[in-house]
Length: 144
Image (cartoon, rainbow, N blue to C red; front, side, top):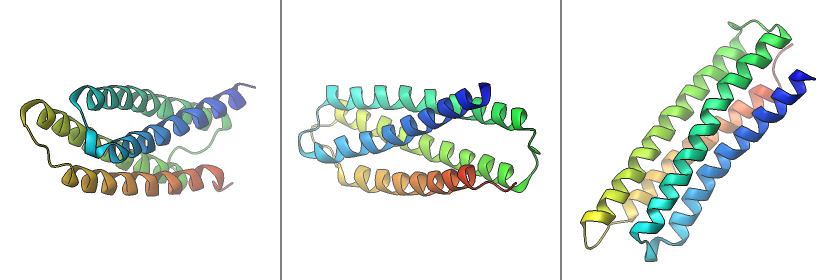
């Protein structure tokens, strides 16, 4: 019963994280011609809060499920998921830095070059989503 609840929490938090990544990228890309300071500030605020919540819940629920199922925490698939999780966290920090830089440009400059932001955010998004899909694969098809 506890394991099933943890699994649901784990899946929901992972979905929130990937949804926040796609959502912030989509809205920034879609509205790139009419970006205003207030809009970007809201994107950054909600994206960072939602992503941070998901990134904090993921290891807690993951390690709890590993402990309940008595999996070896040093097995290859567990170490692989931890490595991928660390890579996703680093990519998230890069994306957060890019968002803060865009916000700073909107506050200080009359014109903002959005293309470097879109290209950089695209690379972060592609890297994060690739890591997430491999991570999902490892979670679903973990070795016995």
